[in-house]
Length: 122
Image (tube, rainbow, N blue to C red; front, side, top):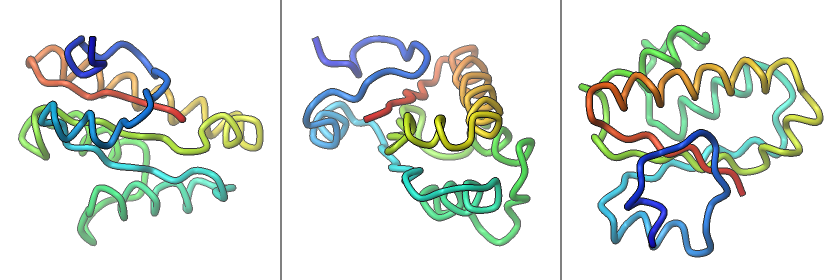
């Protein structure tokens, strides 16, 4: 069974060929590269770049949550591929904890309005 045929469930390991699988399932996939990030500023810039957020993006946790959890923003079936999450968590545990909280809260909020946000790690 394809990952994208099931409801999102926390942060999951990305299957092989995730980009192709997402395309076939009609899922909008965004890759967030965390490998070389060391601070919140870089993290917010990575999300802003990958999600193509405008200059009005606030670069803070509330703004990130608002963008991710808003059912009017983006595709109703979205996935974030968090590349280098394990390494990022080791380098920046407090920042990773805050990020995880925002991502999981957004996933739950979208599920409540019957939209999907898969959170994937490599």
